[in-house]
Length: 304
Image 1: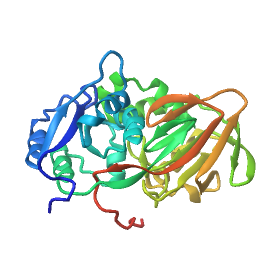
Image 2: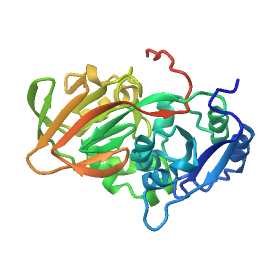
Image 3: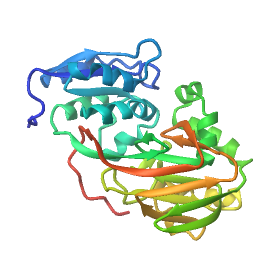
Image 4: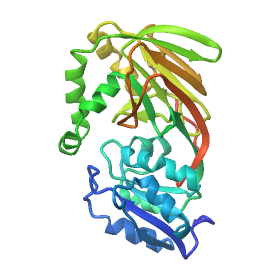
């Protein structure tokens, strides 16, 4: 059944990232589905060093929604523009991991994702924010930030999810704990950790899960700290990290909040949705119902 938003004549800003891992996949079938749903597609791309957010803001008077073909990094680059304009977002998953699409139930097949855009009403979705930088999935300090630094675009396109594992194993062999001070909900804690992560959605990193019951519209941030002192211990944790049940382990600190500050003795890079965007001290905040996304209606979280 066609949603009220999707009436004939609506204009959609259509942006496809050709550098996404599947960005060169033919998009003509998805375009045909979108046009059959009554959308007039307006092709757009950054000009003269523009960001995707700049493009969205510049074109906001010419469109009623934005459809982006790409991965999590592409979506992240568009986040500020989506918030500034209030335009609804449709997603065609073309990236390496497509963690946000998985979190909100968007089909992995771009044609099926296009059919979804033409059949549902956009619903409110939360975003996370750290030092003014928005994120869809997760922001992290430590191990994941090192991974983002070393996992090149070439490796992503050549190896896909396997590239994460190859680079991660190399970094893991040399990882050391670092000291951080965590301020949240009226308390301050000193921790020794390998990684601090703050999640908005459920999935990240090509197969990891922030927290088993997390959703992208629950109005909360899920914090966890991996306080393991041996690499083999992290390997033992891996199945739980994939399921999102790692918070039950004694050497994992986990809590839910809407505001948390992480300070370190020396500045450390912060990874937001796969890109290094800021440094500690890092102030994380929840941006509830920040954008609207063409996604299936909210469903109960399956317990595992």
